[in-house]
Structure formats: C-alpha cells, structure tokens
Length: 126
Image (cartoon, rainbow, N blue to C red; front, side, top):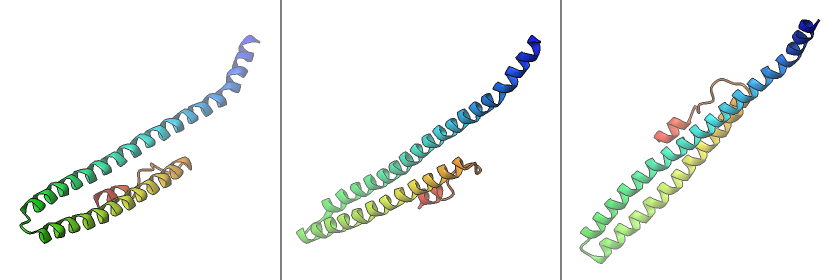
C-alpha cells in the first residue's frame, strides 16, 4: 500500500517537474538572447566608433593642411555634414537592430526555431 501511494505522489508531481523544467529552459533562453543582443549592440557601436575616430583623425589632418581660412571652413563644413549624416544613419541602424531583436524575442516566445536575427548581421555589415 505504501508503494502505491508513493507511486501516486510521484505521478502527481511529475507534470509539475516537467513544467518547471520548461520554465527554467525558457528563462535560460531569454537570458542568453538578452546577452547576445547586448553584445550585438556593443559590436555595432564599437564598429561605428572606430569609423568615426578614423574620420576625426582625417579631419584633423585635412584641417592642418588648410592653407587658407576658406579652405578650413570648407573642411569643417564637410566634416560636420558627413558626421551628422553618419550619426543619423547609425541611429537608424541601431533602431532596426533593436526591432529585429524584439521580433526574435517574440518568435522565440512563441516557440519558433532559433530566434537569431535574420537581418541583424546584414544591418551591422551595412
């Protein structure tokens, strides 16, 4: 009789354990996805920062080679225009990456296969 009641208790607890495992795995996947997303953003920002620093060095070189005041003004004007355009494009790129990450999170939550962003790599490269 004791063996039967133990088996009944195990049978009753078994679905709870299975549900707990699924919850733990879902939590782990969500944490992994958040970590991966954070790393993607950092990589994108570091790539952009490297590019901007290279442009800053080029700006200083161009400015120091300017022989006339008008030339210096042209160099500064061009630098500011290009900087504004590039910062705007980077903001759009980061927004698109964020949108992809949200879509992937929703897909992952719905049980769709691995939510690695379809467009994030392409956006980062662009």
